Length: 213
Image 1 (cartoon, rainbow, N blue to C red):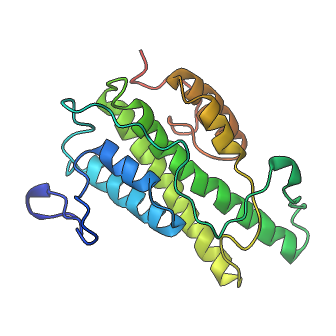
Image 2 (image 1 turned 90 degrees about the horizontal axis):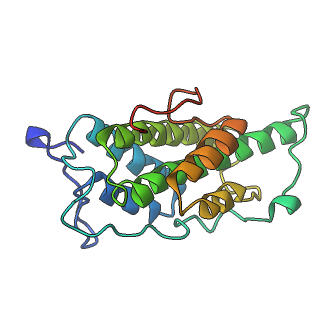
Image 3 (image 1 turned 45 degrees about the vertical axis):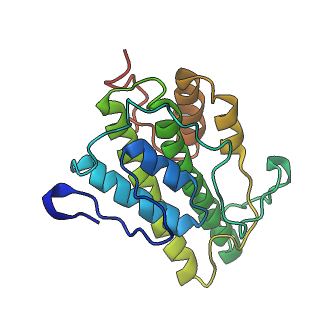
């Protein structure tokens, strides 16, 4: 929530200090298990960052804190190996359409984590410029809003996110590219995600972002 003079005001309930930088926000979001709250916090962080209320992308005086190997996720979503995930069908029945919606919600939820992970994992470590943080804050915000719409639609249809099993193949690829930003961009954000209808950080076009090189 925005405060006076552009400062960020965050509820300190629970004894935790409010995030001070965008990377701190990214780590907080990655540590949030509830998918709706994860999307809400991501929307808030992106909004505050893009309007200038979060002053720094990271603290250059502090060593970069490594993000978790795996973000916090809701136990309500049962995960299966990709080879065992149920087939979605072609949308010819109500059950098939519901399965497609659930799959899309799952992809968008992981996309939220993927976007904030790239901020937390590479932003401070590689001393990336502001344009990098701007791009991925916007992407993360969009993914969270997509998830919120799909989650709401599932509830309208009498279901919910977590009602069906899913797989986490996107995160498997993220871990295989966790050592290299260029590999992450190429494999995760511009191949896997685009093939599943998710954004690359340049308005759907696969091109070199302004901040690269």
